[in-house]
Image 1: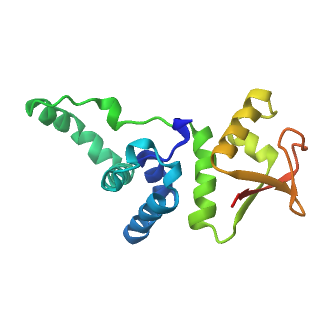
Image 2 (image 1 turned 30 degrees about the vertical axis):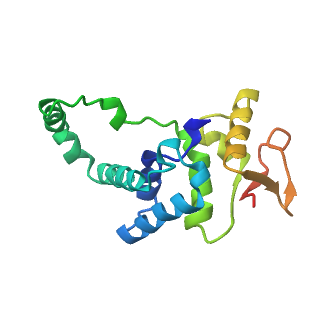
Image 3 (image 1 turned 120 degrees about the horizontal axis):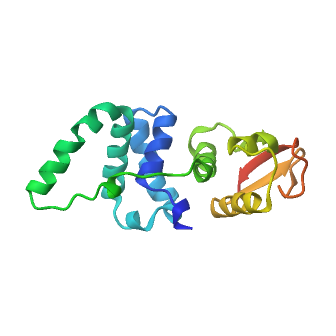
Amino acid sequence: MIELCYDSYSLALFAVSQDMGSRQLMEFIENIYTEEHSFLHPAYYDNKKMLFSDTLYWVEYFIDKETLDAEFPAVQKDFNAAGYKFVEENMMSEYPDFDLFFMFLRLRIKYTNTQDYIRMKLRTLLSHYGYKRRSSALVEHIRDCMQFYHIETFLRGDVFCDIREIDIDDMITFRILG
């Protein structure tokens, strides 16, 4: 499940989506490294400096994408001239929105939401992925993501629920365990 781990790309995407200022961004990355260490991609376990550097790179990229894209050929040429191999795929990342939804849900609850939960209808959750009905494969992937991020679902009155068994129009409350 390494694809669900926090990496610099996903953390930067979250920070930009939350319109974090510089100070808030630095505190956020520090908190991720100390409080969410077990969710970090293994490349960052013992390299806090690299997490900061890579995340700040991606934040800058998302904020000023046009300028950085225009400079990309020059950067690639400089790497080649210095004798380094520039692997473009190492600097680009494609994340399925599906997995980011639960990552962002956890991060919003922990770091930006004033409440310790987020509520939505199951229908809204499914439509977020472009589905009108739940399939067994889709539900299993949702459950895998929820298990990885330690997220549980509840109905009104804090009644634990299983998304496989509830009505599609039920309002779900997502909470982080522990």
